[in-house]
Length: 372
Length: 262
Image 1: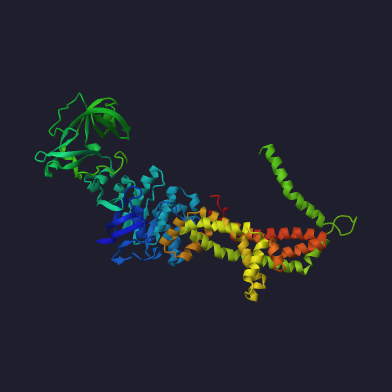
Image 2: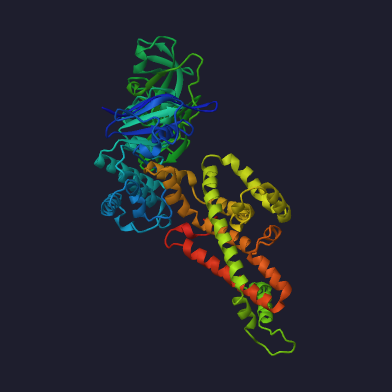
C-alpha cells in the first residue's frame, strides 16, 4: 500500500526544469533511493517532500493526506542532511532531544528516548560530547538519531554519507539499513552512488534531467536497464550500437561484426539497437586456447591493453580492431594475461541485453561507462 | 619565542602601557606646585562628584539601549538576508559603511533636522534621539561582526534541520541560530559599548549631558582630576565589557568562540 506519493511533481528554477513531472509511490516501511548524477533533480524532489521548497505543480501525499502546502515544521519528516547539521551549541544528547523539546515532551521521556536512540546508533557513550568533539561518521549517526527521535512519518536522507571516507560509508550505510528495517520506517534516500543505492534499497528510482528514467528493485535495475542512461549509470556496461540483421536467428551487426543476441529475435530487421554486455558476462581466454566461437559464435579477438586491480576481481580492457570491451575476471586468472597478451573474449547470446535506439538519436548520454 | 618577537612585544607593550602610566602618574599629583607624590585626592574628587555618576549612568544606559535595539533590529535582518536574500548582502554592507563616511557633525545636523517636530519624549530625551543616532553609529560595527558570525555557521542547514524537527521560525532563531552567533553578537556589543561611552560630537551638538561631555568639561577646568577621570572611565568601560562577556559566555559548545575563527 502506498504511504508516500509524489504525484506529477514539477519544479522550475527560471528556465531550468529541475523536476519535470515525476511520479513516485513508496510503500509503508519501504526504502526507496533516488539515484542520479548531479543536477538530475533528486535533491529537489527530496526538498519538496521535506517542505523546504514548493512545487510549481503536482502533489505530495503522505498516508492519504495532501501535505504539498504544509510548512516543513508541521510535516513530521525526519531529515539527515549531506552537510553536518548538528547544532554546535548542543551536546549529542541535546541534539537528539531537540525535536522532543519542541513537542513539549517531559524531561524524563526525552532523556530516556535520546539515550535509547544514541544506543541504537552505537553512540550511547558519546551523549555528552559536542559536535566538534565527534568524527564525521559519529555526527551523521547523531543526526540520524535526532531525525528518528521525533518518530517521523517519513525519514529523508540527503546524501548523508557523501562527506565520509569509504570504509565508514560502507559501515554506516549498513547501519542505516539495519535501523530502517528494525523500525520499519518509510525512507526516501538520495544518493549519486549507485553501489550505495543498490546495496541498501528496496527500490531504486534512477533520475536524469528532472524525470524518472526507471524505477524498480536493485536487481531489476542492474539486470534489465530500461534506457541507455540507466544502462550506463548502473554498474559498468559495454555498449555497442548495432542493427538487427536477421530477427529469425537473432543476428545483429556492429562495425562489421556479427553477434547473436537472443533478445533480437523479437525485433524487426534493420532496427537500430544498443547491445549491452556486462563485464562479468565476458569470458576471457588466452588466444592460444579454444577460440572457435562456441555455440553462439559471439567471440571477439583482441589484445589486453589495460588491467585495473579491484581486489578479488581485475578489470581488463581488450581492444580488437574498432571494438573495445571491458571484462571483469578473477585476479588470479588475470595474472596469466598480462598487458599485450592476445586474447579471445566470448559472451553467451543469452547474456546480451538489447535496447531500442531512435534512428537519429544518441546512444550515449555522457556517462562514463567505467564510472562506478 | 625568538628574541625579535620579545622586542616587538616589548615595543607594543610600551606603546599601550606608557600613556596609561603617564595618566596614572599625572592623576596622583597634587594641584600644588612642588608638592610630594602621591595623593588620591583627584580620585576622591571624581567619586564624590554627582555629575560623574549621573553622566556615567546616562552613557551606560544609552549603551545598553543601543546594544539591545541594534541586536533586535540587526540579528533577524542579517539572518534573513543570509537565508533568503543573499543578493542583498552587498547592498547592506555598503549601507553599513555610510556612518564611517559621513562625519558625525554632518550626521547630527541631518538627524536634528529630520527629527525636528517629533514628540518631546523622543527629541528632548537622550533615550530617544541619542539612542537612535547611536544605533546608526553602531550599525557598521554590529553588521560586520554579525555578518562574520553568520558566515561562520551553515545558516541554511541549521535552519532546515531545526524546522524539520518541528521548530518554528522564532524558535529556530532563538534556540538554534542565536546561541551559535553569540560570539559575534558579543563582539558587536563590545564595539557599540565603546562607541557610546566615548561619543562626543553628537551628544554635544544635540545638547545632551553624557559622560564624554563631562570628561571634556573636567579636562578643561581641572587638569589633575581629568587624569583620574580618564583612568576611571577606562576601568569602568573594561568592567562593562567584562560583564558583557560573562553574561554572554557559556561553557561547552563552540558558540563562545570569536566569530570567523571556525
